[in-house]
Amino acid sequence: MYLFNEIRYLGTYIVAGRQLKCSIAHSKRSFHPPLNAIFGKIRVASEEVTLELGKSKCFPILLYGLDCFSYLRQI
Image (cartoon, helix red, strand yellow):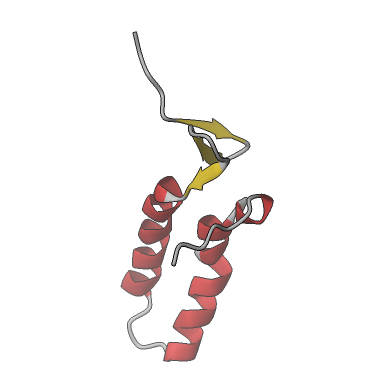
């Protein structure tokens, strides 16, 4: 018998529990390879160019689907 703690729905991972929660662990793992590829290809570019490429190519991977969930702030 398998127990699943999370399920993938439309590209976002929903964690089992009493409240609706979203897991971004898979997004974080998918975020780093494109960012490392950008750093590997561009060695002499300015910081602004590197940041813009990171924002346009890598941040959407990290932020996909997060606007559907409420953010719980723990103090």
